[in-house]
Amino acid sequence: MPASPSTARALNDRLALRLLQQEGPLTAGQLKQLTGLSRPTVADLVDRLTASGLITVVGESGEQRRGPNARLYGIVADRAHLAALDVRTEGVFVLVSDLLGRVLAEASVPIGPDAGTGPAVDQAVAAVESAAKEAAAMAAPPREGVRGWGTLHTVGIGAPGLIDPATGDLRDSAGLPAWHRSLAVTLQDRLPGARVTVENETNLAALAEQREGAARDRDTFVLLWLGHGVGAAVVLDGTLRRGASGGTGEIGFLPVPGTAALPSATDCTGGFHSLTGAAAVTSLAAECGLPTPATPDGPGAAEAVRGAVAEVEKAGEGVPVPVTGPRAAVPVARPGEGEAKRRGGTDVTAGAEPDAATASASGEAGPAARASGIDPGRGSASESESEPASESGSAGTGPVARETVARPGAGTASVPATAPGRPGCGAPPQAGPGGAPPAAVPGDLPAARFLRILADRIAVGAASVVAVLDPGCVVLGGEVGQAGGAVLAGLVEERLRRMSPLVTEVRASSLGGTAVLRGALLTARDRAQDELFAPPDRMGG
Image (cartoon, rainbow, N blue to C red):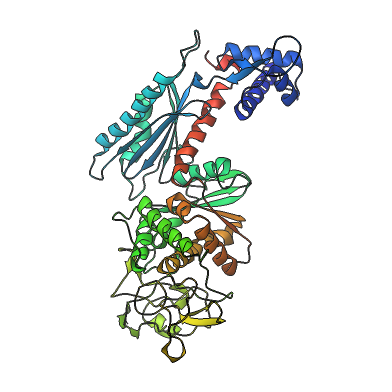
């Protein structure tokens, strides 16, 4: 069925506006060439879009031609302004841009854990209003007869937690501040002319990585967010997948080996979060003897990872992957020294694995289900309830898992993967024949061991996602993923290669902690353009 004249005009207008957005200012002749439309049709749409205040003459082409130079048309960026919010547990970051995405104003407000819902929401809304006023002051003079010039048209909010797919509202989630759920409603009340959209922060980060970051060449990939908490976003065939309840990617609740408990429906302690959340990362760095920040949040964990990468690169070790062979074991963590008391009352010597019968009698999972002595409540190795280091799926490693590493000029040497000293950080170099100090072992730096073990933890969760979805590409996002860069991504990819038959490329985020804001802005821009680029009778201008 052929399109009606009004529908055809709307489609042509949108096509022209998208081209102007992507390519920048164009002449009518260039629009004719790029759209394939006739000269009269292009002339009509230029007149319509100019009258509606969406495009204007921004200059003249530099073409050498007879007669006057052709006019250059461009989108009127100040026709409407957009706001993007990155809502964290500790505060809000805000930016306001024009229709082309140019940032006009920024603001941030810290919100303490003791702030009540009302005061917290008031602070966040005030930050948005302040940034919007600053952006409006920078806007070009209003066009006569065009309503809404320079006003805040759309607000995109990125927040942790589940988004109800039916209503688009942020659902009540344990552990998240109550003011998060009130923010969108209050913004809509205080900014009645704006359209307010809420989306899960990890989903927004994936959108930004797909359009502007590490996944620009991928239609199918998984973003693994590593920051204060952990999460995942799934993009299949170019479409973001949310799931039946909006919970696709709640990987923090994924039960994994290496923790001392199982997560519950209301608490991800004991899940993947307990291995790779910010508190666990900073705790692991401390166990490895590395400098650690005072605050175990996302930026703090990123600081520890960034420092470790710098130390490894300075030492010239490149990507520290000393483990060889498809079955070599890398411990997630190790128990404390000497004797350890298992839950269930069984006394065992550190480093010794109980057989299946002993594990069953004590009410514990066997070696394949344990990889560390982490106490999820503290995020560090527990002295009283430590578990022997073991990797899920490893076989034939004996009571103490060993890893074969190359010594420069000396073939290979087998060193214990667990030993007294630093919990969770592998073994110190062993003395050579006759008591001579051993040659340097690649990966023996505390920083290298830290990155190796962190990569092993990340791979445990990533392997589960890869086994189910086969995305072909995993992007390590968030502050920690960006801080680890190619070094951490390379380690995780190598580990996945030995854990899974599915070929998976691992990339580091190129946007890091800014991805949520970028994704919120892109979402706001899409929604604003869907309305503003509509047929003239719906533009309100």
